[in-house]
Image: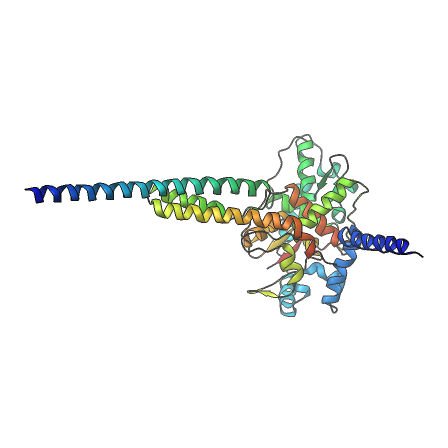
Length: 107
Length: 279
């Protein structure tokens, strides 16, 4: 009886731990998706205002949102991070070219 | 001459040299730009650059000469003439909006308007004329606006471009912004206009020969086989933006108009050859 009780407690403990870990991972995925998506949208907005947005960034943001709606949280987080990278790179290019375009001028 | 004097003269010379290099005047830019193409393609006459890739590639030129037996843009000229002559909402005509009745003036566009401080392209002037006389503006890029522009360009055939940059800091700023738009890398592919049309001009990009930037605006509007239709310069620029995976700007945005101003100024002295035909 004591053995069964101990085993039961262990199984319940294990299951609770698994459920807790799963919930935490899912929550982390949600947070990382939300953070990356917000960063991607903000950077893309800046890039659009500075007329240096990339045409691939908007569709990448939409793809991340679609995956999130489908409940594919890990894939959505990865896609949002990719969109954030694209938007950031377009801004980096913009800043670089503001300084360096004159180097290409025909002399 | 003492040491201080020598140092001062040297410093001034360095500063002056830097200033000339960093802030070349439009006239100096024009000379360097046209000189670049002349040196790179010594067998091509300067005026021939208005024919784009056909000036550089013999086999393409032969195909183009065949196409020009029955120019695909001739319908647009006829349609444009009809539209041009049709009265506007208040009974006035396009001819009332332009100098010389709108005929033989393509070589002067784009212009810098000192009243508004903006670059005015031929297409933006056409729509401004419509609005001034109670009509709605035409959609940009293709259709009727391309047809009217094609007709107006045809009345200037062969006239040398004479784009002016008035003595106004805003005009120079517009020219500079146009140059910046031309030379700035953009899009995921990290290309500038100059990457293809200056640095790699004449080389093949798949089946296409990269056209020279010199004379590029002279043939617009153009009939492009890939469009199966006529289009204006801003339609083509948007296409280039998409090809390098950059987000295109709105048609006739300030940046597009400034870019057209810079590019056409670079073609000063070359003849109007619009409307034209392109692959």
